[in-house]
Image (cartoon, rainbow, N blue to C red; front, side, top):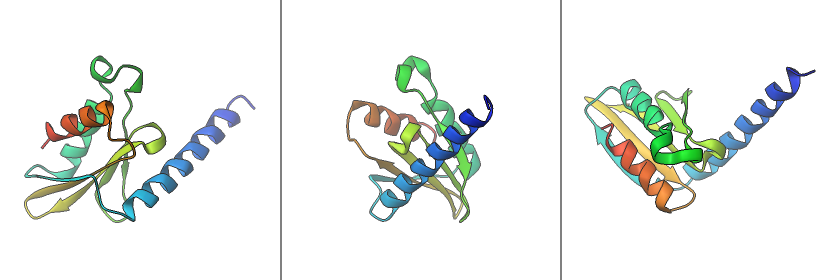
Length: 116
């Protein structure tokens, strides 16, 4: 029972995050960015940057998942901010989405930009 509850909670949170991201994707991204680096490398860099506790404190989180359509998604808790990283000619395209355009979201955008 002790194992089942945390696993069930994790599955429920992923489902909520997925619905939030799908709703955001139905509109335009907050920002488009391009890179000459491989998509996997860009996505991993963004994930590591968003997990930096010195910068984000208790808001530090970054989860990386491959997308069914190709590429990767990196997202924060509750998918408040996320990026879709797609392969494109000679590199990667990064679509940045955020629910709140505040200081933390600007820091996350800047951290993502350093990975390009």
